[in-house]
Amino acid sequence: MAPVADDATLVARIAARDPAALREALARHAGSLNRVAYRMVGDAHEAEDIVQEAMLRLWDNAARLAARHPAGTPAGGALRLSGWLARVATNLAIDRLRAARRVSGEEVPERADETPLADTRIEADQRDAAARALVMALPERQRAAIVLTYYEELPNAEAAAALDMNIKAFESLLHRARAALRQAFAAQGDAR
Amino acid sequence: MSASENQNGAPIVPGSPLARALDAYGVPELSPDFAERVLAAAATRPAATLPPLPELRRSGGGGARGWRLGRRIALATVGFSALATAAAATGLLERVGLPVPSAEKVWASITGKEAASAPASAPAVSAPADPAPAALAPVRIEGPIDTPEELGEAFRRIDEVRAGRAETRRQIIDLRIDRALERRREAGLPLPTPEEEARLRERIEQVLVRREGMAAERIEARREELRGRVENGEALTREDIVRPLREEQRMLQQRQRIERFRQMSPAERREALRQLPPEERRALIDTWRERREQRLGGTPEGDGAAAPAPEGTVSEAPAQESPQPLSRPDTSVSEAPL
Image (cartoon, rainbow over all chains, first blue to last red; front, side):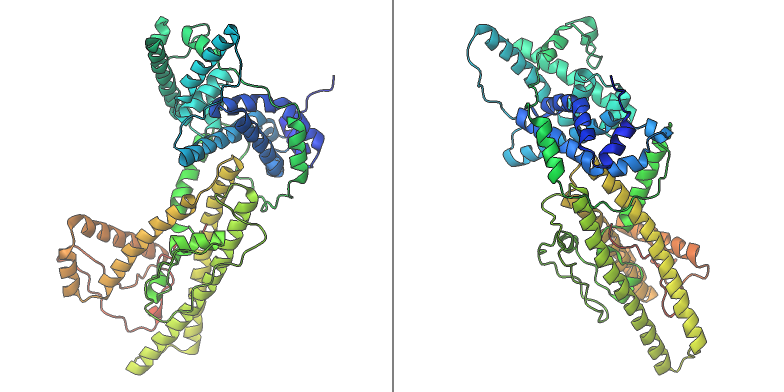
């Protein structure tokens, strides 16, 4: 099994316009970016667009990143591509949510119910919809805090960096996000 | 609900009812051909025309993030007040009447679209025309600026406007010196010798170059921040560019008001100050003091300008007879665009 290239080496290869390196970056990061994007915007097509745009931003900015984090140096060792991509994808998602709100006035894109039947499937869909509603009811940045820390299990420091916040401000945001989630969850229970 | 979950902002415990509810939020897989699509898009992506990289200012790791962030904020704050697009030739320029373009006009010069008509204030002297918005370049800026290419193009257009304004500024300064000399000649006052005049012009040029250099540093810091934001996926809106202009315009209005006070007689000035609401009077005096400190910091002799001062303390500096202070470039020339 070939050794996995570190992030700085991978970025240097992307900067050199090596498509195999971009493919490797996709294999490593596209899945997690898709989870972040989907849970932020709640729409599979939008999420794919966000992941694609984030990867193309990497393609465009690889030379700059490689110059700042040369492979084989301490600066190169400090590069965390997953964090950089998470930040890009989160920002793109927030931008899209804001743009959608400006256009339609809607907070949450509704997904058409395309699935048929079977009780178990219906029940699963209901649970999924309830969870989606909980997450989507959060303001964008609170939602991002939950997506990054709960679903993606990023340490607070990394999630804070992804949102370009200092750790104290992020912890405060996360605290508010959890409180809002609990309140919404309790309200769902009351409604049932 | 578990006890820990009753603490509102506490971490969500795995296996708790809330966690089970959240875990039901599934994510569909990416399309099977997703990677191929991205690779194809990358292959057809136009070559990035990124501007040259700035010098590395810091190492990659370490716990200095707070300082870096603080420095960025400080630079941005200082930079914002002084930068922003061609709105900035205040200070000396406000005296010589170079019109400062509106935020809308500056944005139009960046995007290449027509600005809503916003007449500039009438110049005090007949100044050369404001440089026309830069010609459109091949890169089109559609909607928000969200790619390095668009940002680079915006910077390029701003630089064109800045270069035009720098040239205009020099022409106006020359014109002002010539007129001041003419007035002195007509009044029978002593004139500088050609050597003295050359030294004066050289000194003014040096100050201008120094100011432009300082502004360029602030602009580069601001640009670096904007590049970082675009790099991180943010889309820069008109507001990102225009907001600092509005602030700059507010400061300009304050300076213009000071300038008007300067030209009043002491009695008129006292009366005008008395007419102002206390907050405005306070703000005006603070601004004037700030400007005076800046000037004195750069040139120890001061300029003899009469300040708006609290009642009873109005400065009444006499007009100087020396040919030296014909024109002073070291008033606050807060520079140009991003």
